[in-house]
Amino acid sequence: MTYPIDVTQSGAVLLGKSVVCDGFHFGAKVRVQTHVHDDHMTEFTSSKGLQDILTSRATHDLLIHEFDADLPYRSNVYVINPGESSRRNDVSISILPSGHMLGAVQTAVETASGVRLGYSGDFQWPLSAVMSVDALVIDSTYGSPARRRQYSQDEANERFVEVVRKQYRQGPIHIHAHRGTLQRGVQLLGTVDGLAMVASERLCRELQVYRNHGFAIGDVASEASSSGRAILRDGRFVRLYGKGDRLPVDHIDGSTIVLSAYMARADDPVLEYSERSCRVALSDHADFDGTLEYVRASGARYVVTDNSRGGHGVELALEIKHRLGIEAVPSRNVSSLEWGV
Picture 1 (tube, rainbow, N blue to C red):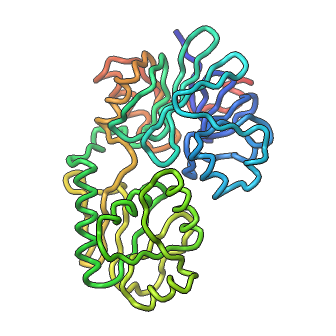
Picture 2 (picture 1 turned 60 degrees about the vertical axis):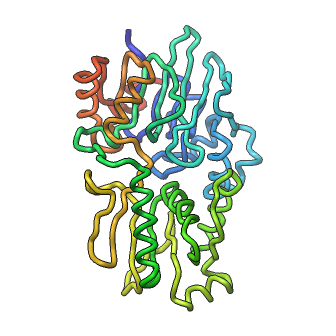
Picture 3 (picture 1 turned 90 degrees about the horizontal axis):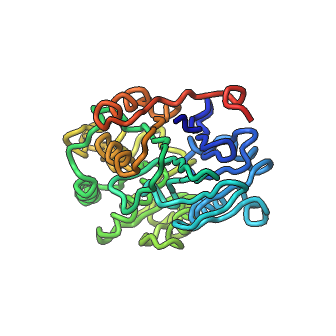
């Protein structure tokens, strides 16, 4: 059986003819926004004008904060709760959390004939629940056997806190990370007594969205506030840098920590560049083994690996066929003309 799933040149994930995830495709009536990372936000403005948009509540709130103040007033933007279904024409759409970041979801589309088409979105492993589908588009970010981690994320969390405790005794710390990973790091810092944290006004507002959704994030002073300026003058602080924040370009007092598993070691979550700078492999993606476990848990009989992001789509398709015995192909990264409208 041929299943109607694929990925376009721009990274839009196609689940049948009427539903697209994380991109715009002319002719698809519905866009599901799985999360708010930039590489999944392609042509969001086009979707606002021409499609119904479905999101989780948390993703909806982050979108309002970051991108589109008019979203609460638009009649074509809908919130769907995990575990619930939204009927759209001849298909039923449901979501489940993917563990990737606040609001991130897996997406399943059930067609009129009862076939279930799914998209993993970016996901963490293990997950408490995996959607059951017949055909699956899977994230390929860590789709290579070389992308295995020999330590748990709990171990990476502990090492991060250890590094912060040590470096804070010596002076200020500058922490850089992508959205989601940064907030996870800030939560972990709640276990360290006496930290004075500072961030941009924009990031402080975003942290409040996370608090509103149950994240235990302590006080972070805006750098523009009187308390924030006092902390910076004191010289003992943790300065947080997220999306859109300007990074230091001159001499940095203190030390720098980057939170990312990209280019990290497989056998140690901490990669030291010098006595004053390091990378800690906090990851919001499943590694290679976790990716295979997700495919197995989904029950999919046919898999398309996302070959538009991550760079491991072809390799992952071969590994799924070899190791799991499931038919798998890399996405064709099709054009609108090839897919049809």
